[in-house]
Length: 328
Length: 303
Image 1 (cartoon, rainbow over the protein chains, first blue to last red):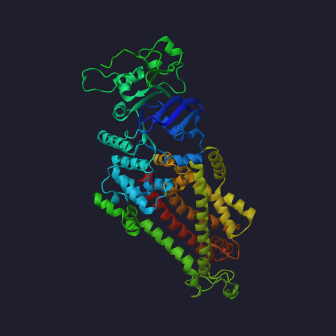
Image 2 (image 1 turned 90 degrees about the vertical axis):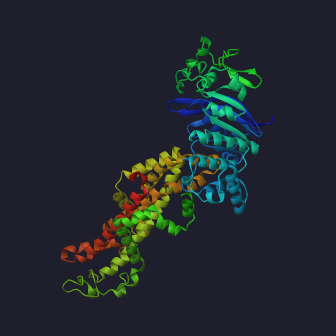
Image 3 (image 1 turned 120 degrees about the horizontal axis):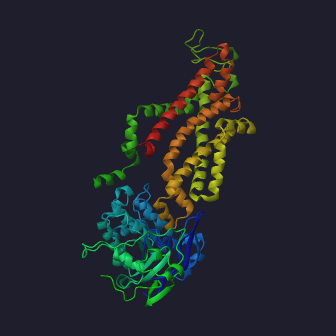
């Protein structure tokens, strides 16, 4: 568990629009151990998805990965050519997308789409591929896979499609799976099933998972470690239990407090006041300062640096909420 | 219900077509049936017609000048051998129409295939990759679209000279634009779908994505455009030939027949011009009926 599968160092992904530069991901570092599940959480526009896409270098114009290192099993992906990346995508690192309704091509059967990845990344023959597809569908809990292989995506429900997509992502035994809001488009009961399944498969195949979501409840159940992102920066990172119980950044605290709880149903729900700032015009100091309850003058002028509060628990805040336990 | 669906998708393709929604609507759509019957018959005539005609109008040995100016068989002075009469050189009009339709339809269909192939390819590339190629291609298309099609075709023909091959070049050069624009627009929409992103994340090379995932998803509009384009091309070719810049005189297409007849129309030889003209109309009418049906069926926005 100690070996690092992925190390991201000083990653900067900027979008050069004619209105100005959007720093979608601005100088983030994190690492991921083998077999670990890492959650990336934050509001919309916080740079979570861009982080995911940056790792497999699928940033579209006008976005550019400005600098940084993405070290995956000892190799720097930033130095890889597009041709080499094609061999890594899907084989070593695969992705699961948000909307299962559009993630499958409506014109092809499930089998054709599953085999596509196998054809590309393995040298199995036709029968072996079919066997593998059936096995994969079984492993994601689809009953009578032999018949279902010939079906088209519209013959599956949303949850079923997401299972198929997970099967596709798993097909080449990748070392890392990036799941970009895999359950956002599903209803709540299905969400739990899909997440449980995902966790089970990740553990079974001993691969790692980066789970990108805005749902802290999901992430606290699923992950080993959490990165909290705000405006392209990682504001707090650490082991899941630590983040949930001993968080220091006002933003993390705010996110957690805005989850409705059954125990205090007569109180108003706490919210984080304000909205995410305009990405073209970010505040000069701490990005969170304009919305922060605890802000002081220093916050508006100087950008906070990452500090290690306890082992493996980092926070970027001038005044972390140490000893201030208002987790109710 | 689930089982029913399972069975359906494993049936052979013909019974699937017969049970499909399009076929169901087709059976109820009279214009579509008429259109397709006309289209099939005109194609059959173009292919097999020459075996049944009374003469080969291209073979000078079979034409006799003494047969000239014979009116259609039901008019006074008509000859039952020449159903639709003969022209100045003693050519049987019906035979000339059959042979001419061969050329007209060949040009219409092959011209469509060429411009479809090239236009679709350019549209795919331009839409998928975007950027500078896209800007360049689309500006060329804009400039070209600001010229009337016929004018441009005449211009190209006068540059190259007469000939079937040259007409095909001209038609391809004026026809690719529509495909390129339509396809590009569709690609822009399909490109944003997550399954394209998913294919990229799966490591598929760009060209595999374009041809395996993007192309099939835009094929319906290409099909619709193509049927309409066949009719359009037959008309354009007829126009060019009528204006004297189309096919060579020795191998008259329908348009050239109309022109040849038109020269003598006011001296009473109306049949030499009217019948080929009517036949052009019938072909294009059939193709357009079919095209309209396909457009209504395959365009989800019109449903």
